Length: 340
Image (cartoon, rainbow, N blue to C red; front, top):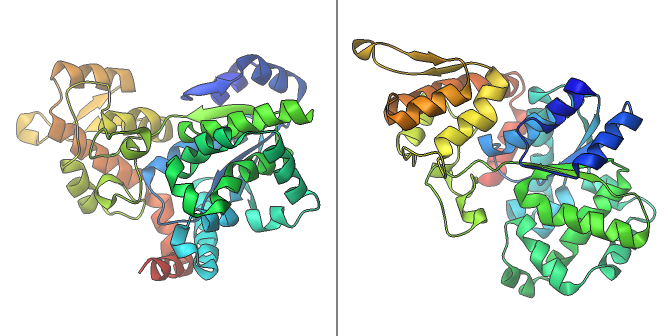
């Protein structure tokens, strides 16, 4: 139990609930977890935070299913709502996630919706929930409540996400903090329907490089803001350019560059080096993220040195994705054609 639970909880923003997780790990050597992704654009660093946790769940003895949520992407108007484009997105995501970890199982939403009883459960979840609750949960799509008024299908999205959890028979639902409403809906509906409810595990959201926005969905890293997102296909020169313009105050709160170090680079690479010209003493290496944070906040590390070190580390971290595309460029080419 020791390290197993510690690894499951490492770096998470929230676990609902700790007692339920403890019981799950004590009673099940091979529990099942899932995380879902809509097919959309090219993969960016923000998506790697829940993927890192999914990889750590595999290391902790979980069977992890990645739901390639094509129907959800269709409802959410991703890739123009075009099914050829959505299929290209699914193929690309499967390649990218496999490059990050070989231990995942994959399922598409198209497979789930064809299962007996799926749509019946969507209606049962809807019956157990209020319209107000469904409206509040629309934030899981990156939408505000008013956007669904012209498209009734969007109100089915939260009920479908809860039903996905039941249909996959998972013990744990994983997602970023932006997925909290859906997981709480699934847990509450499960209580009312008298079925097993999942443990919910939520990872932090990486902030947009442009800095804090007006609301959570504005301030998180997103492909919809190309200058504020770090794509896994960016070369080191592009990463340097994007990061050179990043919001990076000499404080910890709302600092997207320090977020990247804490929640992604340090856990994946396990080493911390900032870039500094030789005439100023050369590169700096730190034993832990906390040492880096302390030095930056004290002014010992210059913002540009921190940003350049971030670009170099991300370039290293992104190599498996870029090598996967080099060896088989078809999924990338199909998706980028769909994005044109």
